[in-house]
Amino acid sequence: MHSTLSFSRATTVPTTNYAFHSQSPINLRFCGLRREAFGISILTRSSSGRVRLSTRGRSKRISASTGNNGTPPKSFDYDLIIIGAGVGGHGAALHAVEKGLKTAIIEGDVVGGTCVNRGCVPSKALLAVSGRMRELQSEHHMKALGLQVSAAGYDRQGVAGHANNIASKIRSNLTNSMKALGVDILTGFGTIVGPQKVKYGKVGFTDNVVTAKDIIIATGSVPFVPKGIEVDGKTVITSDHALKLEFVPDWIAIVGSGYIGLEFSDVYTALGSEITPARDGKPVIIELTDAKTKEHKDTLEVDAALIATGRAPFTNGLGLENINVVTQRGFVPVDERMRVIDANGNLVPHLYCIGDANGKMMLAHAASAQGISVVEQVTGRDHVLNHLSVPAACFTHPEISMVGLTEPQAREKAVKEGFEISVAKTSFKANTKALAENEGEGLAKLIYRPDNGEILGVHIFGLHAADLIHEASNAIALGTRIQDIKFAVHAHPTLSEVLDELFKSAKVKAPASTSSPISEPVAA
Ligand SMILES: Cc1cc2nc3c(=O)[nH]c(=O)nc-3n(C[C@H](O)[C@H](O)[C@H](O)COP(=O)(O)OP(=O)(O)OC[C@H]3O[C@@H](n4cnc5c(N)ncnc54)[C@H](O)[C@@H]3O)c2cc1C
Ligand SMILES: NC(=O)c1ccc[n+]([C@@H]2O[C@H](COP(=O)([O-])OP(=O)(O)OC[C@H]3O[C@@H](n4cnc5c(N)ncnc54)[C@H](O)[C@@H]3O)[C@@H](O)[C@H]2O)c1
Image 1 (tube, rainbow, N blue to C red):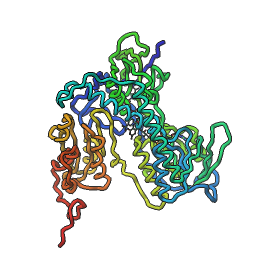
Image 2: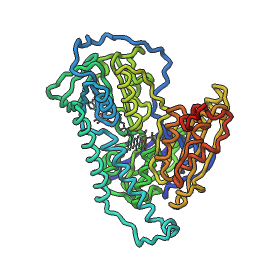
Image 3: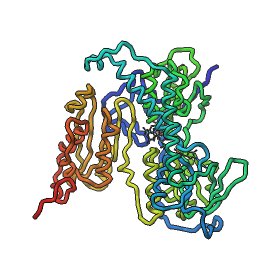
C-alpha cells in the first residue's frame, strides 16, 4: 500500500553520505542551529521552504494583575507545583527543594519527558553507535591510524536495546533523585482550574485538586507533522518511532534538515540506509513542491519517510482558558522571566511556563535553566536567564556547536547599535590532539567586538565540538572578555587549545583588566 505525502513546502533532503559543502552563507536557519555561521549548507532539493517555531516579538507593556478567574486559595498544599516531569520540570524541582520549597510535580505519562524517553538520551545512544560504525567503516581513517579491521557490523536489536536501556536507566535516576529529595510525584494529567489551583488524575476518572503558591507549566512538546502527511508509525514515522530502531530502511527520505534530520541522517547512513535519491516502486511517495511557486519539482519513492519538521508545544487540556491565557500557535506566552502573560497582556500572578511549551529555545538544558531561573525568582532573587549564553549542539559526526549570535545577526546588531565587529577563525588542522586522533577536519569561529573584547558568538564544527563550546558559553554568561580569557591556560595537548588559539588570535583594543580572575593578584 502506498502512503502519499504532499508537501506545500520544499523538502530538505540530506543527500547520500551526508555531504557538507563550504560555500557562501545561505539562508537556511533553524531553531537554535545556525549553519550560515560557517557558510555550510546541506545539499537540498530546494531551499526556499522553511518553518520557524519560535516565540513572537511582544511590544506590549507588562503589568501584574490579579485577573478575575476565580478566587485564589488562602492557604496552599505546596509552595510550588510543576506540571510536567520532563527535564525542565525535573531541573526546577531539584532546585526548588534545595531552596527549601515544598514541591510537587505532576506527570501524565512517564518521568523524564521527551528528552529522556523520546529525545536526547536515546538519540545520543544511537549516535554513539553511528559514530563508531562510521569510524570503523572508514578504511582511510583506520589505515591512517595503522589499524586493521576486517568488517564492521551491528546487531539492530542490540543497538535499539542500548538506546532503550540508557533511557530506562536515566528515567529511574530522575525519579529516584526527586523521591530522595522529597519531591511529591503526583501521577495524572494536570489541568489548571483557577489561580494557584490544579487538578490532576487519570483523564475521565476522579480528579484530585491541589493548590500551590506558585505553579510552573513544563508540559513540553510533541512532533509537528505538516498538514497532508499521514504518520502510520511504520513507513511514515516521526522521531518517536525512529528512536526505537525497529527497522533500518534501505531507502529513507528525511523531511526537514534541522537537528533531528541531521542527527538521524548520521544514524541511518552509518547503519547502511540510503538517504535518497530513491528507487521506483517503493511504499512512500513524496511530492516535492516549490514553496513559493507551488510548482511540482520532483517525486521520490522510498521505503520510509522520517518527518522531522519541528515540534509543536503540548498545551492542550492544560486549562489555560480558566485563567484567561490564550496560546500563540500553541505556545504559552511568557516574558523574559518566564512569567505567563494573559490575553490582555497582563502577567498572571504566580504562574510560569518553562521549556518547549514556551518555545523560547527548544533544548533540554534551556528548559532546565529556565526552571532554575523561575525558582530563583519565587525564592526572592530576581533572575533573568541570558539565552544568548545558552549553548546548542548537533551531535552529528563531526559535531556542530554554537553559542550567542551568528555573524549576520551580529552584523545587524552592530549596525543598529553603532559598533564594529570582527571575526576570528581557527582550524583543527594544527591541533595536536585532533591530529593524533586523525580528526583534523574542523574549524572554530569567533564573532566579537574589537573595541571592548565582548564575545558575541562562537561556532565550532569538529571533533567534540559539543563539549568544547562551554568555555565560550561560560565566558558569555559570566561576561568574561577576550582580553582576559586569552590568558587562561589550557592543558596540552587537548582539543580545548582550539579555543585558546581562537581567543589569542582576536585583535582586541581594550587592555586586560587588572582585576582579571585569571591572574594572581600582585601585591602593591
Ligand atoms: C529526537 C530528539 C532529540 C533531542 N535531542 C536533544 C539534545 O541532544 N539536546 C537537547 O538539549 N535537546 C534535545 N532535544 C529537545 C529536548 O528533548 C527538549 O527540548 C526537552 O525535552 C524539553 O523539555 P521540557 O521539560 O520542556 O518538556 P518535555 O521533556 O517534553 O517534558 C514534558 C513532560 O510533561 C508531561 N505533560 C505534558 N502535559 C501534561 C499535563 N497536562 N499534565 C501532566 N503532565 C504533562 C509530558 O508527559 C512530559 O513528560 C531533542 C528532542 C528530540 C525529539
Ligand atoms: N542536538 C539537539 O540539541 C537536538 C536534537 C534533536 C532535536 N532537538 C530539538 O528538537 C526540536 C525539533 O527538531 P527538528 O529537527 O524536528 O526541528 P527543527 O526546527 O530543528 O528543524 C525542522 C526543519 O524542517 C524544515 N521543514 C519544516 N516543514 C517542512 C516541510 N514541509 N518540508 C520540508 N522541510 C520542512 C524546516 O525548514 C527546518 O529546517 C528542535 O527545535 C531542537 O530544538 C535538539
